[in-house]
Amino acid sequence: MKHDLAVPVLLPLLALAASLHGQTPAQPRTVVTPADTGQALVNPAMGWAFHHYDNNIERYGLDLEPSDTVDDFPGASVIYLRLAWSYLEPEEGKFDWSIVDTPAQRWIDKGFQIAFRFSAAESNPKQPYATPKWVRDAGAKGYHFSPRKGIDDTSPMWEPKYDDPIFLAKLDRFLAAAAARYDGNPGIAFIDVGSFGVWGEGHTHATTRLPYDARTVKLHLDLHKKHFKKTLLAVNDDFSNQGRGLETLHYARGLGMTLRDDSILVNCKDKAYHHAYVSGIFWPHLPVVLEMEHYGPSVSRGCWEDGSLFLKAIEDYNAAYATVHWYPREFYQKNRKLVDDINLRLGYRLQLLEASWPSELSRDQPLTVGYRWRNAGVSPCYPGGHPAITLKDAKGGIVGVFVDESFDMRTLPVGPPGKALTVGRNEKDLSQADRPLISYTLPPAPVFKPGAYDVYISVGDKTGTPKLALPLPGNDGHKRYRLGKIMVR
Image (tube, rainbow, N blue to C red; front, top):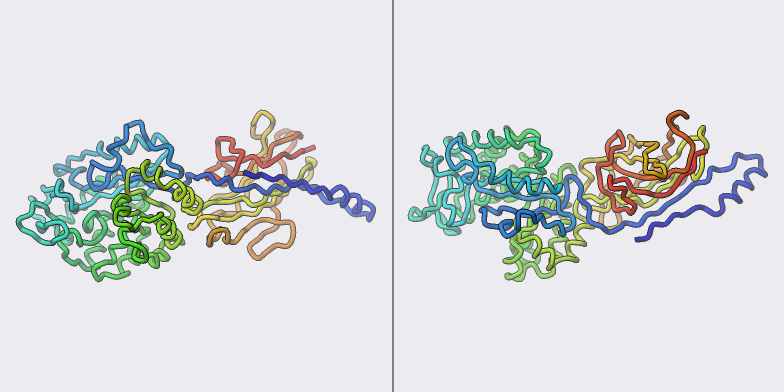
């Protein structure tokens, strides 16, 4: 990709003219205008997610070899483990965490995070008790049902009564155990509130079809928040279904939870999704998760078409995460261009449109830096971050680090493709969003020696440690990107 380095050729003439008029000549500046490399980025609070378990242990990760983490899928960052509670606690107080930890460590070792949903009701006849049978045997009330037909006392499948006190007490203890193990773990991106409704989606359309009021939903939201105090929780958009309305989602947002919408493109065309308007409650503050319908059935029903409606949903929801609800490699092989297009918009994408610094300066002169940034994604840069200029010598040693602590990428606005407002530091013609050049004093002589140095830029914490990947060439392997050179005399 193009990486322009524009050195103003008129500067020597301007310096001569200034000297003839008795003025101090302007400091020559190097200006670069890097082009976006187009590469997929893996950054915190964004990216593609794969379903390793999907309501049962047979799909979709079972076909992968233990060594296969689908590294050829660009932009993947999260592995999603959706399991029934009964897998994790087959006997009261006796837990089988290895069913989670084994695949989790496989992916975490490759730099992924994981996400969970522990469900209390399923529609798969192979698993009649998603809530462990011992919960019912302890006296919890519930109903037998036939999938998608409603209550059926002759069916072995069972769904709990979601406001039953015995069920809630047993669920409370399970969530306490899960939180003691996983809450605050940096390897976990988010955890769904999954204990209410079939598949944890917040409705009973495929099970008993019984309605529950907002009060019951809040009981489940409160239980999750009681135990998971650090890890981000996600609530399904369908928690508002069956007449409950937006009260439940506003309540979840008040608890610090984000939004997840399952099964985009389960229906076709203008019915591909329904709740994009709800996303506005969440996305300005927290990363929104979009899950596509099972890809194969969506294709067979004619709903998927070219997949462009999934990209449209990402735009409409300002989504940070996109979940592949299928075998990930097959999906990627059939949708390469779509995946590439989505990677240019999913989550946040910090583009450096221009940077400038003195071409030469003496030890007693300030290092003045300018730049223009744009967030080319659909969601804010949730983790935030500060630009840093790093100077390196010919051997790659770091000789100077200068952090712009007052410039936070979290504040960059989002907008339609190519139209988000740019924010920067400029020499002149400042817009309302721009700021003056930032000026740094070089370290004293024993610490900082004169010489020719490479100039790198990064985005990270206030100490200058890089945290975020940028779509720039010249990566030093530590998320610092080479822009050019500077001479210090």
